Length: 376
Image (cartoon, rainbow, N blue to C red; front, side, top):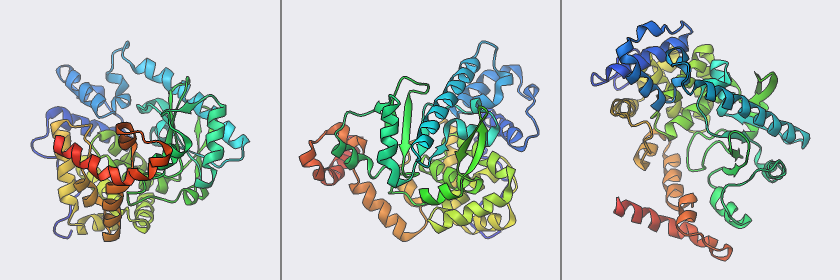
């Protein structure tokens, strides 16, 4: 393997705690399908193990360790209610002839683990083509959902255009819905085209119904980009990624090629490197070679490992992190420009401008970010 790469199978940092080592081993057992034996966790270690599993959002994978009165039962009930809500939304979209995908949430839980209750989630995510956003919005509103933020239509366009999704709240479970017309904010590299993902979509059975989801290769590429945006700070991101990659290793190679086409290959390689190092899972030969050639990966892997060792599972990555996992120079330039000028909810919350002054947001954003940095 070329120098500078991350060698598969290398152990986590020597500073890793016993609960973190146990958690990685337990996740590996679930990913490989070898089964998880609760007896491997000594009674005196269970409290620390479960606390860490909750913080890394993988506690639903280890129900055998939870006491009978734990939140597992409530989680299962919520997941069933979320599936029913998802079915209602999809039925309404199909009735309106709107192509739609279920993304993350219970759909991803079923893709990875075969059980909608195997993930902790607090919202539902639907993805529609950009050309169908307004029609989809009307469907959502007709079902009783309402915009989460009290904005005018012009304010919504100004703030959410660069984010690729808008939020709605309702009385259903879960009470938050994200309607996407892009898989991430436009500042990030590795954004797969929604229309292309729709043409390659497949179906999974959720609650006795077939639900459209991204193909396995697309899901892996999308997961890698999403987790890289969040610094891979929770082990659950890696667990889901690894579970799907182990199902069909060739899909991981296809995902790498697909991500490469849109500038997201390093994010995919980072997920593969973490999978090999933290979970001791083998990579397809050509992907292992690509990981070994990427001299930037060791620094990124070390950053993630340090987060896990410190227990920072809600890390908010700085711009320097995003620049590091963004591979192509033009994509880094776009990231810098859009991170500097594209308005976000933070700008609107700080200063909700009237419609006539909305063009000022790109001018105000650099000053707000500078002020926030100075205050920190």
